[in-house]
Amino acid sequence: MVEKDAARAWIAERRELVEQRLASVEQRLATVRGARSEWSDEEHDPEGFALTFEWQQAEGARREHRYELAELDAAEARVEAGTFGVCEVCGQGIPEGQLELRPARTSCVACVDGRR
Image 1 (cartoon, helix red, strand yellow):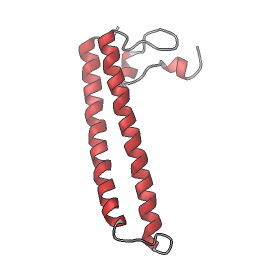
Image 2 (cartoon, one colour):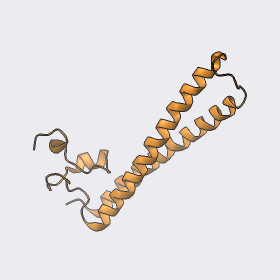
Image 3 (cartoon, rainbow, N blue to C red):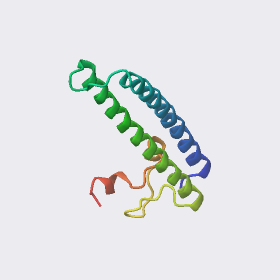
């Protein structure tokens, strides 16, 4: 069983990293938003396609980061419920090394790989 303080620390550390990445993406989106407002003919503007592509990539990254933050919220709830670190598939403990790297993890590597 993982100690609650260790689990909270892993979650907080990961949350800080994801929030930093999200802030960077938000800045990128603001820059692209500003650049996109300066042109109106995407089809004929050589920068149009590049800006649209950049926009789509940044939006995708923003969705991923927000999703991971929601996963970290769920991990915090599992800490409080006493189920953090328990594989949802097989019910065995997830090794601490795996949780430290990815604290939102809900399945052990063996179950993810289909070995169980």
